[in-house]
Length: 273
Image 1 (cartoon, rainbow, N blue to C red):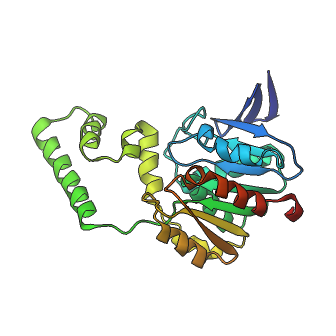
Image 2 (cartoon, rainbow, N blue to C red):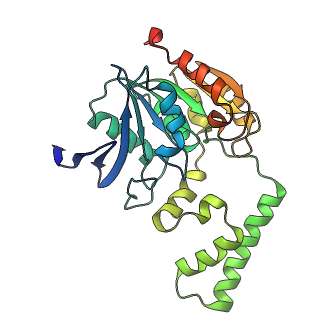
Image 3 (tube, rainbow, N blue to C red):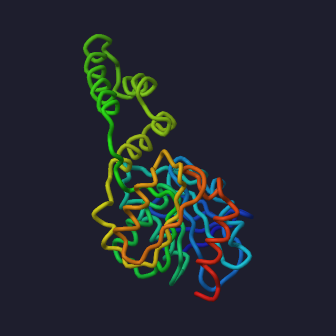
């Protein structure tokens, strides 16, 4: 059964999962636990609700925890156009408003953290406390080997066009991505591949100083996807922030789960609501 919320948004009961349509995109989500003030969890790029269930389970006994599949991930549908960071932020804000949430805390891992940075930098009044876990948003320092790889890719792109006469751009890109693409790039196609290229090249460095939210930054000491120096920059730029280093890599919340759970439960305790 479906309940009409307005002319462009429907909500469906799917047992453990719920589904809401926003801007023609079906957004899959779950709600666990009960509390007057919910907490929203956003996963990283290429992941889904399943990847953050450890965070859900750590908090659901004391908070209403909402986790969503971002557009093009998990059970949520892909957007019908190339998305950028602001588009993802707008979808999350629309989701919050459609559910009638007046005030919420939020946790974002990797790209989910980047999305929260975008939202917080806009001064979104419904967002209160924010937790960033191994968040993206700062463009990495590029090595010489990286630039060699980029220029080699561009060279072969021109060469393949001249010699092999590919019938379509998609066919050519598929061939080159097998040789030069990252795992995230290889695992996407169509709109989502173009979206990935767009969002991964967006820097939010200049937006960090605009954030007024109380912010906890959690980072894996051995993170080689978004290295620890990025977390230190975020801690320096975001006024009301604290940085806690965890053992492990990019999925530090899973690698150092016991310490993560203690820290996150303390930070988001009922006494501070």
